[in-house]
Length: 192
Image (cartoon, rainbow, N blue to C red; front, side, top):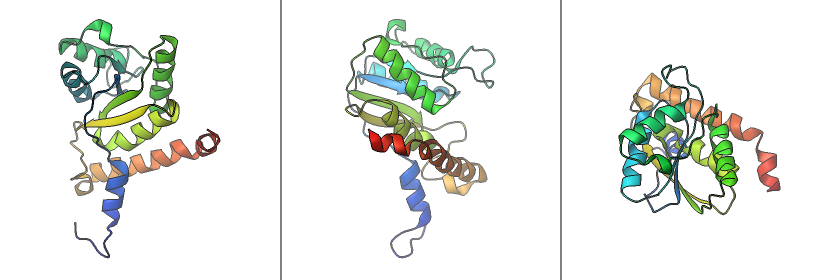
């Protein structure tokens, strides 16, 4: 990309949509619902590296996964196959979108008196900003979040999203969804 006047719109969109933090020790690994098994592969890897002792996959029914009752069941099965102990997986299998992933995950942690101060979110690269903002909006302010990303089947990344129609459509869809998600939330966030 060539820059004009020290800023290029694609750079600004890329910086806004794509978030990736350093991997640091956390209290829990959160996974928003998805049919992307690579997210649980990464979460299981982090778990085995000692990044966090608990994994909480979230997500309800997904028609793309007809052999599973939920995205959570699909992701949990991968975790078990990767050697994550069943007792270290917390189940949230009702969420239908990212806001519900975050809201219901927090409710489960509260109802089970799981005390956390830091979370590692594992998600698709292009979903990283929306996931981060959503979990931040639904969890208490004192919780520290980091984001670890993976590529999905379309392999959309911050380096290539603008090179294909699928990439452009997906990333600009994320921009629109962030606007839709948070337009209604601004007043609530200001009052917090």
